[in-house]
Length: 106
Image (tube, rainbow, N blue to C red; front, top):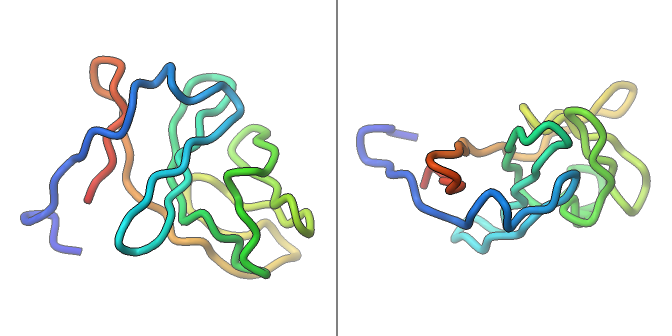
């Protein structure tokens, strides 16, 4: 992706995403799940498990991972990579918090 032509898009307030929870944003590339960890870090990945397409936004967040609600695959929130022994990757997206607002790179 050419970062010279991309922009940061406001998504919501940080407080709109529950700790250890997610919020889903619709995008041209498909739904994106934006996760908030227990220590207020924010991550964004495609809301589709690489295994069988389960909705990651409905999974359980623990540390830097989310567990898919369908078959218990763990996905690393920072990279979208499945945790071994599973193999696969959900696309990750750049996200940041600025003045309490969650911004997604589009």
